[in-house]
Length: 395
Image 1 (cartoon, rainbow, N blue to C red):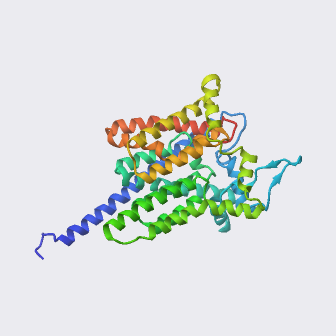
Image 2 (tube, rainbow, N blue to C red):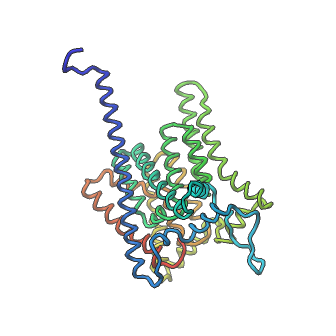
Image 3 (cartoon, rainbow, N blue to C red):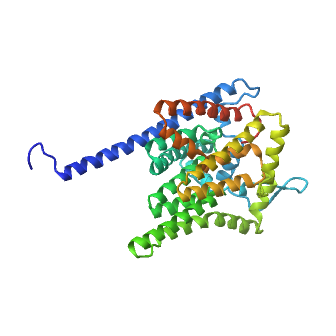
């Protein structure tokens, strides 16, 4: 070896180290963006909560509504049948809630944490996982700046407050984004495992499973064309993900003794039934014509803006599995009846609606991108804080 002269091996080794350092820096930046949005929103919740008639701590506000249901599932388990009120009317019960998040809460409680602490800790750790997965997904598809923009835009969206709460959105977002990253990079064992867990986290996991099936079919065709062999790994991953939602709904049917049990419980408790969008259309029509409340009006505008953003995203021909996931997930959100003020929360993990803004930010001048995302974040974080302090209804 000539002193002072680097060999090809040494150069390659340095490049690998630089790549690893760059990747670590990118992940660290994504986590920093998440931390900044969470801290800012918690301060807003504290500030807004101090002006309300009902004195409640920030901690208590993070455990409201669905958080109570998840905690009951985690600590008391699922009921063995339907639940009725004193008049014999069917009510919603814990069987409506998918099992991954409650299981994680129970594991946290098993090591000695209070159940409420475990619920928040799991949600916050999952939010970190979501930030990392979103950064990797955006980077894989559109470059590092798009990855950071996707994290910032998603984590400061109007309903992103649920990422700090005892809700399942953070774990679902982490799993679905991780599944898409694994499928895009063709790590099929990881894609299959994450796809199954995604499908056991929320009903919209069915949309994620369909996306993984599309990715698997594309991979099988490409591998067969390039290598003249049949690849079973992608199809096994897709099969695992596709089994998730039917497994849980089937288990509920077996436990209750009624094939439609899960759907009946959802309808009885939350009015959630698939009506092909008639309820959403009626809400939009009524609100835009005669609505006088600013929350209903803002939700209507969010729903319309999300549709427009999805149309722009699809016109750009995004990666097909991501497009399939987004379209199917939006059909499920817009096509079902239920609480209108929950729909922005349900749209948060869809991702397709966030792509145009993330791509635009990645291509804009850094100063323009930072100012635009900051303006979005100030409104979005305040809006979410308002919903859990001043707004009296569930998210």
